[in-house]
Length: 548
Ligand SMILES: *[C@@H]1O[C@H](CO)[C@@H](O)[C@H](O)[C@H]1NC(C)=O
Ligand SMILES: *[C@@H]1O[C@H](CO)[C@@H](O)[C@H](O)[C@H]1NC(C)=O
Ligand SMILES: *[C@@H]1O[C@H](CO)[C@@H](O)[C@H](O)[C@H]1NC(C)=O
Ligand SMILES: *[C@@H]1O[C@H](CO)[C@@H](O)[C@H](O)[C@H]1NC(C)=O
Ligand SMILES: *[C@@H]1O[C@H](CO)[C@@H](O)[C@H](O)[C@H]1NC(C)=O
Ligand SMILES: *[C@@H]1O[C@H](CO)[C@@H](O)[C@H](O)[C@H]1NC(C)=O
Image 1 (cartoon, rainbow, N blue to C red):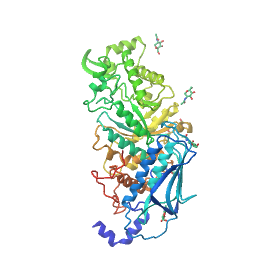
Image 2 (cartoon, helix red, strand yellow):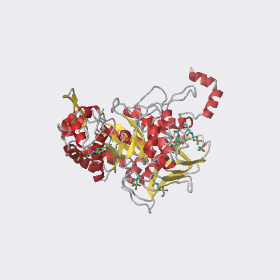
Image 3 (tube, rainbow, N blue to C red):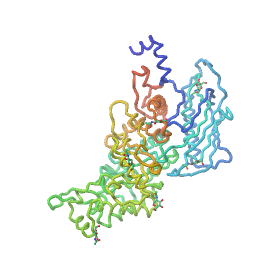
Image 4 (tube, rainbow, N blue to C red):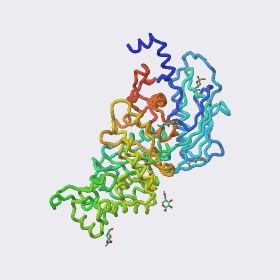
């Protein structure tokens, strides 16, 4: 009925379509919005055999052949849907045929890092209408530039085309993270890779891998094999070092860092069986051990030795210079009940449990220092008053309704770098449109000086694993995580969710076309009766995909 009335009252629909771009008509918008993008009225069509070439003065960065191959395949896929048998309207004629993408790179960085240079410029239609010119400071800008270019392709007269465009682009924040949790539920390697691919499309650059937690210990250590042998759900629910290295390499090829988190001293029950009887603190009730175990016992040197052994291996496996040391939700009750801890505190003149927490955290920080790793901790380490060096990065995760602002203010006031996660826990789901809430967050919207705002390294979205596994994690993350991606990449002034809505819908449809099962986030028949579907129906069991 709705469609019929739209047909009968065609004028009303035309007016609506003037105000809001219909979702099925791709116009080549880009997500996340580039810093500077000037689109012109004229356009070029693409040659199906488009070639990628490196300028002779560019260094040969080792990831480039793989990057070129991936984007060539993606661009070619646009020719499958364009039917040559359709009668062309030739409403306007193209200014040329693009047959070459010429890429210039200034420097190879080889490993993505906190200081990676992701900037690029992209010129379509000038100075030559036959070639696209992409210039990047490093290989990461090539990935981002080709991603942007591919998103700009849309059909004009049934032919894949790109408007003449000039783009200068760089990320607003250097740290654009996404947390996955492989302890609550195991995630297959293929799903982690698909997630990394989708992150790269959205210009995320850090996979925060919360690899172990209290429920299970899937990291298969070679130096401490008992940890996963006794701590994983089954011997199948593990990540071998080879699998992890394969994931890290897969991510590097897509400009994504992998920062692992080994959360201590809380959230460690799954370590207990493999780490030995002294590892977890025995809890006492009425002066007697009650059989339960609390956080890691910070009074035994053996426990620091175990962590040093583990982190020495982790340092070799995970090439990134950052390590996440966790430190969230340490319950003090068990430590309080344990007489050995009380003795230790008396002997060492410690009066608060934050001080005993500090003893442990200091031990972890010392190991990280010795391994020359930078480290991130959850906000409690800071809030509990644990003394941490000023290089410690603090990740703020509490107070999603707004008190995160006070914590961000306090963290940066004390001179620490901060990562904001609180408002972007995508595992909290609700009925209806929720991406706008994520989109409307401004990470520097707290009371502070410019020097404090400079300490905001970026943000991180999270999908905690209690209710997701390989079956549902991707559709639950995407396209909701795209909203956060734009907030972290684009300029602060790109802040209107009303303006973003139509671009996000186009972007979701493009992700579907590439095989990512991104859920429908948008449906508002009151705005436009045709709203909320994509040009090609998505079939999860039969879809050309580009996820791996
Ligand atoms: C892109 O080119 C087409 C065809 O000339 C034109 O109709 C459209 O307005 C252009 N897009 C923009 C954003 O200028
Ligand atoms: C990347 O390189 C450009 C050009 O040299 C520079 O302006 C920019 O600050 C660099 N960005 C980073 C993050 O180093
Ligand atoms: C114990 O700590 C208190 C308070 O910090 C301090 O005044 C006292 O001198 C300390 N005693 C020893 C033996 O370190
Ligand atoms: C940390 O403190 C040292 C010594 O005061 C100083 O040199 C350094 O710049 C500080 N680092 C940060 C990130 O503030
Ligand atoms: C912001 O901080 C300043 C200085 O610390 C303080 O005077 C002011 O009341 C604060 N404003 C808000 C809104 O908290
Ligand atoms: C959004 O950005 C505009 C500039 O484009 C600015 O004037 C406005 O204050 C911003 N709104 C919010 C809520 O930050």
